[in-house]
Amino acid sequence: MRIKGIIKILKIRILYLLILLKNDFKKQEGLNTILILCPHPDDEVLGLGGFILRMHDDGRKINIIYLTDGENSGVWDDKAEICKRRIAFSEFVCSNIGINKADIYRLHLQDGSIPHPGQPGFEESVKRIKKIIESVRPDAVFASHYLDYWPFDHVAAAHIAREAVIQSDTRPELWYYWVWAWYNIRPWQILGAKHKNLQKIDISDQLKRKMKLTDIYLSSLTPDGKPWSGILPDPLLKAFKYPFEIVERIL
Image (cartoon, rainbow, N blue to C red; front, side, top):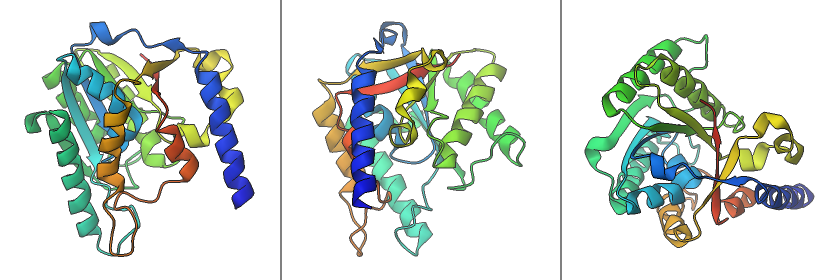
């Protein structure tokens, strides 16, 4: 297991160097309102915490949709208690950033079972997201990346977001952001033309504040000493300390 962990760390460091070659994200000036889809409470901070802080500092409108309450993190027998804690953490995070409660949406889908295309509940989830998009009228929607292919909720969120944007009357831009992609992607996958639209968001000025938001989710422990949000691999945690975040333009 130690060798496997070292390999993962080396891979993520290689990704770090490769990402440095990618273009800087230049779209912020044209985004006055954004909508962020999170499969679970904590994905917004882990994947886009620095960017959210940048947007808020610039006076932009931020809306967040939590698709699930994160009750299946597997760290405690009482799922209702996990749910309660993770919702509370996300409320505290949003309060710390300055996001209004009225701009937070919760779909309460089952953690671990967000529907994929063709599965029961997929079209209904698309309709619910579409309705929010048409109400909020964001300039861009940000959703977890399909390269986050585990946990599968992240992939399902990507599919739902894409379909909702396509069906919406407002047709905002669609961007995917990395969370688990750091851990799962192979370095050679980002060298080809398929992912030519990957961009890095400089969050060096927001990194310390992002780490404080991350601690809200990860520093509060169950009586067994496990983070309520779940146990994340150390190599993945290292990636969240980098001074940039990764997004890709999809639509």
